[in-house]
Length: 161
Image 1 (cartoon, one colour):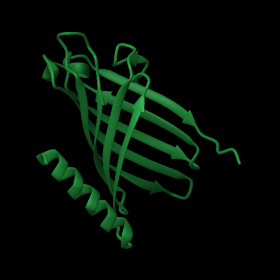
Image 2 (image 1 turned 90 degrees about the vertical axis):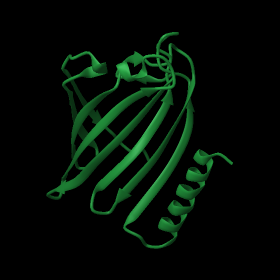
Image 3 (image 1 turned 30 degrees about the vertical axis):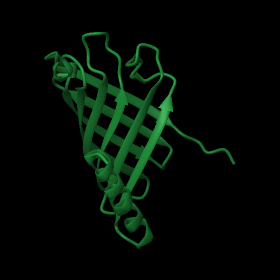
Image 4 (image 1 turned 180 degrees about the vertical axis):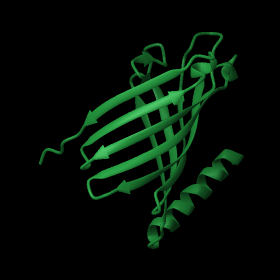
C-alpha cells in the first residue's frame, strides 16, 4: 500500500473516532465528479469532466482547515491539478449574523509551470439569518501575475419543504 493510502486510511479512522465520541473535533472527507470545473466564470478543465476531493477539519470553536483538490487543464504547458489549502475561523456576531475569515492558498501542480500560477487569497464572509451571504476575496497576486484581484458575491439560499 502506498504512503498516500496509509495516510488516507489513518485520517478516515480518525474521523470515525471523532464522530463516534462527542468530540469538539470533526473531520470530513468528500470525493465527487463534475462535468466541468468552472471557477468564477472561467473553465479550469477546458470543458472536460474531472474528479474533485476534499478533507476538512473543524473545531466547535469555529476554527477550521482543509485541503481541496481538482484536476485542471491549462493546455499542454500547464499544470494538471489544483490543490488548495485553507485555514479559517467562523464566528457568531449577535443572534442573526455569522462572520467567517479564511486564507486560501491556490496551488497548481503535476505538470509544467504549476508553481507559476500559485497565489494566496484572503476571503471574508458575512451571513445574515442563515440565508443571505456576502463574500469578498482579495489577492495582491492573482495567478502569480502581480495583479490585484478582488472577488465579491452575494448569495441567497432557501430550503423548500
